[in-house]
Structures are given as structure tokens and as C-alpha cells.
Length: 277
Ligand code: NI
Image (cartoon, rainbow, N blue to C red; front, side):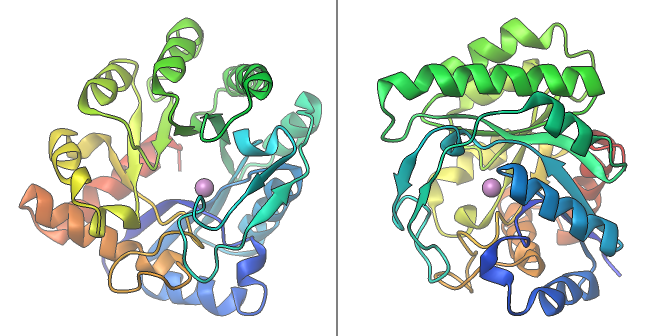
């Protein structure tokens, strides 16, 4: 069976509370391995619990930039779809030692999702996002793990912060920029720093990603769903899940004019290399 790797998903979220087991079995039955991404201390712990319970599942631990301060997030912002419910983040202080302890679990393969998100950001929370991101880069560095980075409307600052820190991050594979939404020039700078990119459902319906996906070499591309958000065509508007990652692979094959098998093989290999799986 062809193997696929969904490197950025969140089946530990409440959207899957009623049928989690079936969702995971559907993915595994379709040849899909996955990394469940922590976004706060609770969802990081939950990701580890799942990784301990199921084969083919791994976890990351991290504090998402939107959870670093008290803030409201509407459905539109979360990409729409029936499972994207508006919520208020309560804001969490980053506890380095707590995250470090969690990251010792052998199934934890990266630190994140962490990064910068300037979408409707209050100026005073920028500083906080910055500091918390820096701490997580330091954690990744201490534990020699790659970063799983979230960045929205903040690529200039992201590149600057990575440039200043990356000299110390000695891994040949410093990490992945998930749901990359920057421009070619930014992709080029991030590739120079050693980073790879994961693409999800959005590329199946938003044509502006075509040139970017074509530009980035296949050995720097990974597949993701970011489930429960932003399902690919033909599931658009529904709750997303890891088995749908194959649709993302099909789109990359179309854009790059290669076979789905080539996409599956190379992107799985990329994931296993970057995350030392
Ligand atoms: Ni995510």
C-alpha cells in the first residue's frame, strides 16, 4: 500500500471527540501516518497520549502564537467549515520546563506549533509572541528537535528571527513552515535557512498556490491536513481529517506533472528525515 504522511494535524481536538477511533483507523487503513500538533499545554499532552496509544502517530509540543494572549478568533479566520467554531483563547504563559518535560517522550518529534501571527494583532501582544517564539526556538535547540512553525502575515519578522537564531540551531533540518502563505522570495530565504514547507487542503481550491508549489522542489515539500480545518476538494466545507491528505498529494502531483506515487514516496521520505522517524 502507498504510504502518506500528514505532518500537521489535530485529531486530539474536540471536533473529533465522538468518532476519534474511526478517524484514526480510516487514516491508518488508507496508509496515512500522522503527527498531531500541540497548540497549548493541554493539546500537547493529548497529542502525546494518542501517539502512545496508536502506531503510526507522533506528536509535537508547543504554544501557538494565538494562544499567547487572550484573544477572540472567529469562524472566518479559522478557514470556515462546519467544524471551525469561533473561540476565545484564554492566553497561556509559556512554561519552558513543563514543555521540556513533555518533549522527552520519544514520540515527540518537534517543537511547535509556534511562531508569529499578526492577523488582527494588538501591538502590545506582538512582543509577547516574539518572546515566546524565541523560547521555543531555544527549546528546540536544547533538545535537538526541528520546529513546526506557524506564520501569518509576519514573514519579514519570521525570517529575521530565524536568521538570528538559526546559527545556533545546528540541525541540517531545522523544521517546517506549515500552511505556507508567503511569496516566492520568502520561500527562497527560508529554504536557504534549511526549512521545508507543508501544504494542505487550500491548494486544491485556491489557485494562487500553484506557482509556489511548482517553484518549491519536491524534496522540500510535505503534506498536511491541519484537520479539522480547511478540508480539500471534494470535502470542502466539511470537517477535515487525516485520510483526506491523499487529495492534497493528488493536487501536488497535478501541479508538478508527476505521479501520485512519486509525491507520496518523496514527501513521506522528507517527513521521516526531518522528524527522525
Ligand atoms: Ni495547526
